[in-house]
Length: 354
Image (cartoon, rainbow, N blue to C red; front, side, top):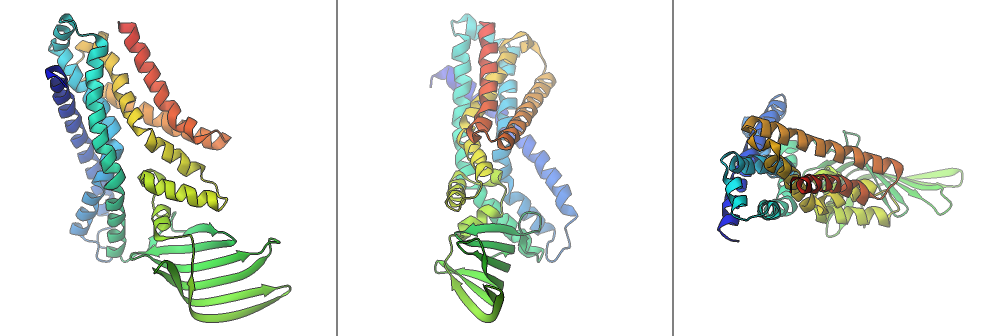
């Protein structure tokens, strides 16, 4: 990296970090307004609320980074254009491709840092934040809108009402289906805890169905070995977009082994794997606004362009993802097509400026 690359890196990195800080402050303020109404529930006080909001900031940083990089690229390179520095660089023999490449190096280096944060730091901190919030409010971590969750483990279909902090389940029903698709047993347990690689069910009421008769028995506890591990529960309790690549791989494998639909999680997996390309697309699509007729535009106009382009990308990404899932196309199409469209549009516009 020569002097020019370092100069462009410093300029774009500074404006990107400032844009990211502003976006995080806005997100923090909106989160503060949302959480204020829950203060007073159980032991959930102001300090507990602040701790929760601070713990989820790495995940919000990961989510807001593409928008911040787009705005940072527009403002940073735009500032160089407004001060005629880009004109001097081009007059010195540096091509538009060379200058764009320097900006992309900045985006790539920042992307690596953010991806490491999003993969190894943010998911675990958000899980801790959710658990502490639920414990402070004296609530169970109800999954999927308070309706609990359904899972399949071979011939067993399992319904869990809620997950408690400390890897404990509450109000569990287990249905075993025989080879002839007949219901064989219904097991209801008050709670369950995970220990030594297996679940220990407590307060059990089990019904065994044989033909037209049923036999009911009550057990104090029962040890059960299941493919549903605490790692799977972590995935179930979170939105797919909040999961790391490792967690998504674990859960996709679990769904496929049990013959369940994994397309939604596979779509999110591809989005995360293609995230570096999406970040680069943000910078590529910003460059025509820096080198083109809009190079003399003010900061406010560039900020508006960045926000509009970022919102357009997220909207297209969301719509295409749902269309792909609805019509049964490969998830890779929904994850990669928005990025490819933005890359193609950006490179085409740059080509027209040569």
